[in-house]
Every structure is written in structure tokens, then in C-alpha cells.
Amino acid sequence: MERDRLAAFLRTRREALQPEDVGLPRGRRRRTGGLRREEVAALSDMSTDYYSRLEQQRGPHPSEQMLAAIARGLRLSLDERDHLFRLAGYATPRRVLRADHINPGMMRIFDRLEDTPAQVVNLLGETLTQTRLAIALLGDDSRHTGLARSLHYRWFTDPATRRSYPEEDHPTHSRLFAASLHDAYTREGRGSRAAAIVDALLAVSPEFAEIWREHPILGPYCAPKRIQHPQVGLLELDCQTLVDPDQSQALLVYTAVPGSESYEKLQLLSVLGDQRI
Image (cartoon, rainbow, N blue to C red):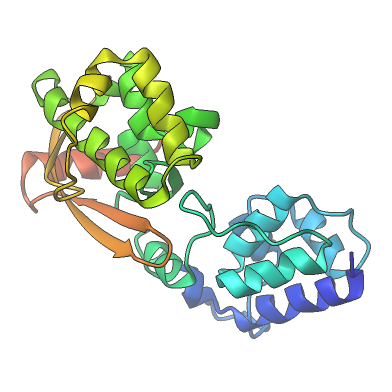
């Protein structure tokens, strides 16, 4: 681990990042040209003390998970992320479909959607980040681990996952999720994480197995959705998708027609916050 070079690299990237780049207000009293250490720490979901010690060359040896969080917080490119890992003494992460690293351009757009339900997902249905209103609408999907990180896996194995959607819409979602996994499996092949999810579902879900045998083809990834929320009831939402081809990730943005009942319910959710029943 090269503490001096690691500290210098973190400092230069922090100073180059502007508040506007991450959706933060600049404020009149800001003296520093870039972000403050406490802001980077918050963006990286770690304590200010921990991050500050890394920049001061006196911190512990960061784990790969902490480095990935810092890379996301600093909006590093893939090449910059790999350099960060090497400075910390690790091999660079494999650039595979399930990578948690979000492209900086995607993050810049995401950061400007603070008051909108939006999330970044990969093609396995793993949620990489969500806005506060997306958590209020859909729940915190980033909390899951293992195969359950994939919404597609949870859909066929966890009945609670289906409660967010009207029962009459379940067949449509089942085909969509199976088709998405079929597309990912075709891209990644045997031995991939997509293959592991498919194999697990074939073993436990007759519904998935039946759809899989039909070789479902992926259509529009995020068509209009009806979401059954436990507090505000049924919402009818449009879903716009921005796909990042290099990362095989998509930014999903949920909106409602202004003045509609669903629009009013989204406004109510923004007040209720992420406290779902």
C-alpha cells in the first residue's frame, strides 16, 4: 500500500470535484475549490474521520469494499478506480456485468434527480443506488446480499417482492424478468453470475423454468408500471430508461402525469420519506 500516493490521489480527485457535480449546493461561504472531506465521506457512506485519515496518510488499510465506496463517492472513472485499487495494494476488480461501479456520467445525471424516484440497476436486476424517493416508493433494494441482490431472483423466490405490484400484472413481470435474465445469460455465458442465478431459479421455481423453456426475448425494459404502495395505495407511473452500454447498467426514472392522482401520491411520499410499512 502506497500511503503517500494514495493520499495525494484522493486529495486531487476531491479538489477537482465540484459541489454541482454531485448535486450539492455551493453556498456563499465555501472557500475550498472542490468538495470538503466531510462531503466525500457522506457520498461514500463512511465517517469523516475514516476518510480524513486516509488523506492524512495515517488511516488503516482500506478494504476493497471501502475503496469501491470511495470510488463511487469521488465519481471515479473505471481507469481511476483501478488506479485507486492498485495504490491500495489490490488487484484491479474484474470488469464484469455485475460490477458495482457506476459510470461518472451516469452518476452526474443521477445526482440531479434528488426529488425524483430514480435508481441505477444492472442487467441482473441488482440495484446499485437509489434516490430517497425511490426508496420510499420501492423500498431499499440495495440492502440485499447474495443471489437476492437480483430483483429477478427475488421475484421468483420471495412472495413479499410481488406485493408491490397488482396481482393481475404478475405474469407480465414474470416474463420481463425471465427475459432480462435470458439476455444477460446470453451475453455472459456459462460460469457467469447470470448463469448462477438462472441455475438456482431452474432448481426452485417451476414458473421460471416454464418461461425459460420458451426462450423469452427482452422487449422494452421499463414499460409503464403500476405499483401498489402499502401507505398511499396504487400508483400508475411511467418509467424512462437511460442505458449505459459500456457498463450494462440503466438509470430508471419514475414519473407521473402532473395533476393526476398518482402525481399527488408521489408528492405525499416525498413528505413521508422512506418509512415503508
